[in-house]
Image 1 (cartoon, rainbow, N blue to C red):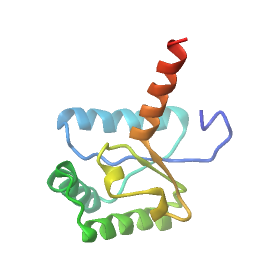
Image 2 (tube, rainbow, N blue to C red; image 1 turned 45 degrees about the vertical axis):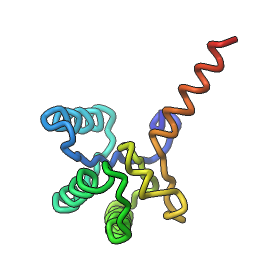
Image 3 (cartoon, rainbow, N blue to C red; image 1 turned 90 degrees about the vertical axis):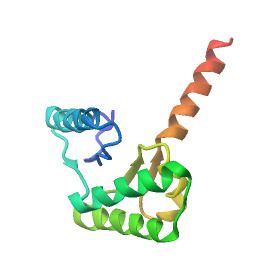
Length: 130
């Protein structure tokens, strides 16, 4: 849809390895989709992905919000913004909105996929009830 609307965008993908081989297949799917539509796929550096994975598995899944972790995640996003000129951030993991919020970013649009999915479900439920 973004491409059809004429938006200039790239896809940023971070493989958290939460579902082992299935996560690797998801990553491959995203890369192939990007190639198919001529959209660049961006990923954080390998060490950054490992850090995000460790935080996700050891903190966020247990609702532990560590200020230093948030600072490091913000640094990773700032690095992507500087090096890759990203303009938006999709919080694709359901725990990411526990630590990252739109208010953390003055010049990036944040998309909370949990919020987007819930809003869509509620809208559909309301439409189907009439």
